[in-house]
Image 1 (cartoon, rainbow, N blue to C red):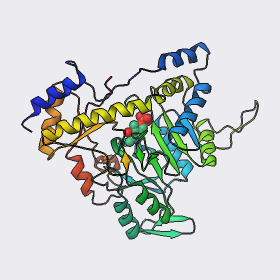
Image 2: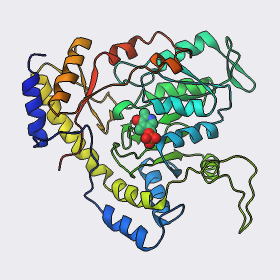
Image 3: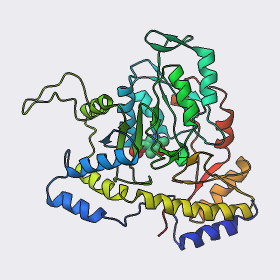
Image 4: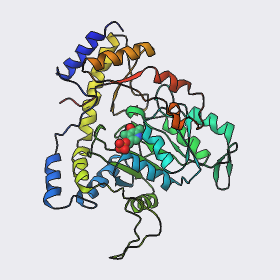
Length: 381
Ligand SMILES: *Cc1c(COP(=O)(O)O)cnc(C)c1O
């Protein structure tokens, strides 16, 4: 890590900025203002409106899914997707420990138990090998589904997360979960527009979830969505997020406790204008990724790239440094120079509140936790 000064200058040159360079920034160059103003002018800023419908239609089209349901944020979308997938209190849900906390929170909100399994080194996402190992040792199939023999709990879902926009090994994971009768809910919050064998992530599992938070590749200000090819699951999702009100022209009646998780139309206006530009955003991100690939090669630093058969959206640019010492120095120097960089997340079981949940050896996750950083990834004109 001798060349940190020149790396910092190079990133500044790329961003043509001497100010603080943030990790990510929204990019508003389409019809954002027009749509948002129109939502205000037509007094349709809240729970229903044409932007909501148009946004849902376009998202379903882009993700090659039958239906999409706009939700207030990605975390709530995950929470509801798990419930719709059939997760019940006291069940177990397989996921990775190397993820953003929202993935785990959504499991806890359903009163279920996360099971932390290792990631693959190449994708940084849930490893089908780790899942296969866990299931072979612990699981059995009964009439009502897959059960953990040792805890007696039902294993009712598996959530792979496509880290920084790099798709997990979906084919192998889906085949495995299918064999064990475990529904897959993709946390595709970071991978909007990323492809696995020509098909968009989010559309592979029983349900997929996206986030449109301010730091994601497409933003609604705040927002999320559930996508699925199962119309009943889509209808059930929409029902649950609109307070689970029984349809009636005017009476208020409810058979179960739902949520107020609908995305407001004014956010959908912003999201639609953004989504219309997704392809160009990804092109720009992939172009700069190539510039960085060439540059970091000359520095002997590993810039993480997409795996075979996938096309990544390159949401956050990612470096793999040699060891934790290099990582710590890199984070310290860049951030103190106004070039915002971030480490990958701490493994979730290291948080005291999650330390009592099951985890496997986590060799790859630990390796990556010590080495992975993100560098400024905002779109450049
Ligand atoms: C952004 C994100 C979410 C959802 O975040 P919201 O801010 O609630 O929209 C969920 N999982 C992962 C991995 C994320 O990166």
